[in-house]
Image 1 (spheres, helix red, strand yellow):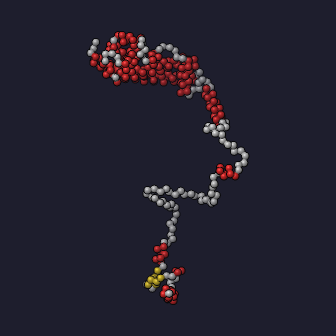
Image 2 (cartoon, rainbow, N blue to C red):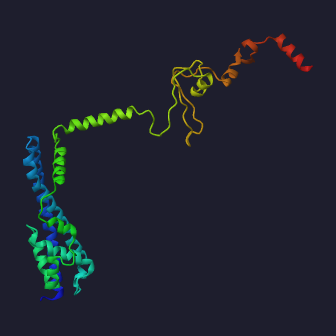
Image 3 (cartoon, rainbow, N blue to C red):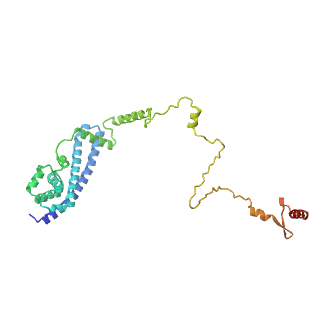
Length: 300
């Protein structure tokens, strides 16, 4: 028997190679499954239902094999991540399911020779008795999802019908014949039932609006409105911000040319013969007699 360290290294290398090979086979099977489903859709469209029911079993078996490869890929990755536990003489309980499932399934998987090499190395590692237990699954440690996908038995009628319905729906085929029309009629009937429902979904009955309403009920039902004249154009004032605390509305149009108070006060004093004279009320220059009367009133 090879030294333990060398054997563990061989197992790790073959596990990584097995993961790569399993992924390649899965990709190949997925591409083949698309072609098979397209051919199945053509059979359903042509009305060859019996032929489709027989051939769809190949698609079911292919899908089960792809699922098996995915499970074995996960087990190989698990053993790679826990490679330190493989150095123990006895199989660790955390690895027993993965190890026995690989030993049980490897001979029945086609196209992945690296998985067979891993099986041989694990058998060499844990001995003949351990390998026989895994092959015969005496203790039931092989995963049920692995064992169930390796059983050779015809699929159930319900599974066949479910596959055919899924394929027909994916390719827009009316199968069984008239199924689309029946579904459409059921949907329309369901919509009519919803419209005829007298009570809302909340369970509260709506009060009937038949008959005249009183003045009090009208006042509660109709909010008061301002019926005065309204401008056809309404302007919403801008909201205040940190940059403009008191915003103002600036309407477009010509500027207001009305003179300011300072300009009016300035124009009250006019020059007459090079001298500034006070301008009285009405914009007229007061004469000497009027000024004398004002001065006399101020003295009083």
